[in-house]
Picture (spheres, one colour):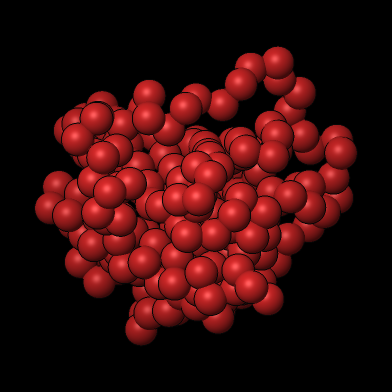
Length: 207
């Protein structure tokens, strides 16, 4: 059971950060809102550790019988354009994240399909992305595992420091796997994946 949900979360993270940049015009959601400042959605101590110590900050929380939420935040030493280009290249994730076998984006529907497997456990999810602007993406799991999960991805340029990236998600529900797995297990996978992606982005900034 533990391996299954660690796998599910690794695929989930990949899908959540995948391409919204290529959405068909009809799939975008018009909005006059502005993205939250990342400093406003993190505790001051957490934000400071992300900036000053370059820690990948992750947190997952399960309220039994009510809901599940999570976030992951990191500072990348690369400009906004490079950071966004890599993190919205969904084809890359099948190569970088273990156990992802397929990532296909349908421009007509604006839906990304991800599939993979570990031993006898299989996963299939469909995610629709809504591009709110250069620095803001919203998403919703519209089919398969995690259906009903919604979230957002924020990109924030910080001058010479680079670019801050924040991803969050939320889903209501009553039936969940063991609390340790869905909280600590998810945090381990989020941190590992984010560090690997950050290293790749920083290797591309001069390319």
